[in-house]
Image (cartoon, rainbow, N blue to C red):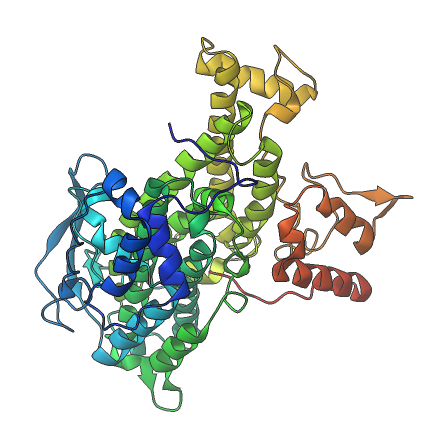
Length: 514
């Protein structure tokens, strides 16, 4: 089991990998893509000479093959291949062909990567060390197989899947564009967020797993570019070049301007990486899974390979969350259970809002984009997150009572949380709690938005009326991470809360993924 060192007394990086990351941060590479940033590697090796002998071979790293960035047959589709799993290298039931986008946009996304993710060079240099047996990362589009050649749901059910954007009329065209734009924005936003706290990862293994997640998110953004770029009919008379305008807008987005609120929150430390991948990436799984039936065939073909890669991200988050909680219950590591609970309180409401308003979503179903309304998908998500939290709690209880069977541990947890009292040495504060769906909402049903609900779903009142913004902000300060209270995202929330209270209206925008 990993050891999570204290964040309060963190010493400077003690591995060559961490040193390389610091140097790359300070001096972003200016080399052409496909070349190793040897300048920075040599600086790191010189600075940590003794650590090189101790941790890794002193042999100079191998150059990164150019095909990792510009595969052969650029702009064309390559023969079918089969994905591989992360455990044991056994083949997965995901078949796909690969393709690249036009050189103009291929270079544009590489330029974005140079600026926002220069550590990709380092990941590729040590790929075989940390992910042995897995196919080497390539920045390509992966085009999977359709589940059905016909539209499976909605008012066009039974008709052939749509191959050209021009075949989508009116609102259907722009709704599809809005979904593609939002999906791509999440990929770019996630990379920016993970990089903020990369240096706080507890060890090299966790650090390189985060780098892999970032690389796969970059490929997913590339995939959305392919959906727009490969189809010339996104350019419509009288409407301009919708694909070009969307791609340029996406490349210009930064943390604070992304489509969905969850991707505008700055990461502070490794706890954000862990909770985010466990809770926010799980929303991605639901969205990708639903969009496998997308009536616009290029989008549907993109979902299978993306969904397969997303599994690694969620697995990383669940393992990290459990390990951090177990370390906390032993009195070890960087974070207390209260720290972890506050991080869950911060992220979970934003995850709920990624589904869109619980009371809507019929349009996406009618157009054959998704098989479930927002509320249906969100309800399944809530149940799964409840299962994740319960799994962590079972591990915590069994750490106190090693011989206790899981079913008995589950009953003990329910008894403690229902009664609010200690049982068999387990106190309510020894367990994690999933916030109520009404807590800390800024989008969604009007009766939830900016209403002063506490973590357990109780409406906070004074004199028979809901408390005001200042009192609610005071309450939030007691249940959210202290650094987050100083963030730009929370400042915006406080402003919106105050404005909403003054006007008595919902001042939110329809920033929905669906």
